[in-house]
Image 1 (cartoon, helix red, strand yellow):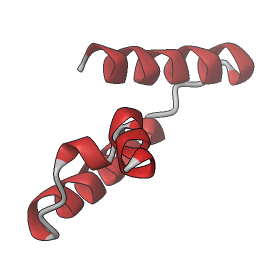
Image 2 (cartoon, rainbow, N blue to C red):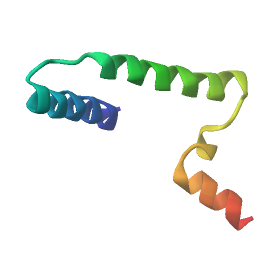
Image 3 (tube, rainbow, N blue to C red):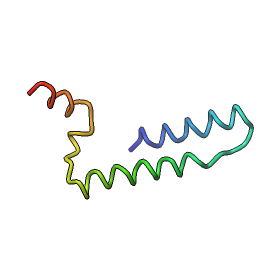
Image 4 (tube, rainbow, N blue to C red):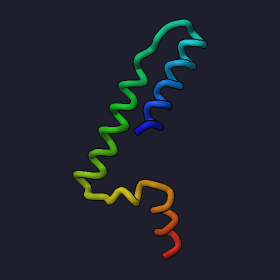
Length: 62
């Protein structure tokens, strides 16, 4: 959860430093990504270990 907050904050800072305007579009993109992952996890019943790197490594090794 903390990494999500830090990535959003970094996006705000980079855009503000480059353009001197505050762009709140990152919140919409984060919401879209979270919505997509919730659909994958809940509707398709994909276990969380398949999304992360160790899960893929384990899948390739077997």
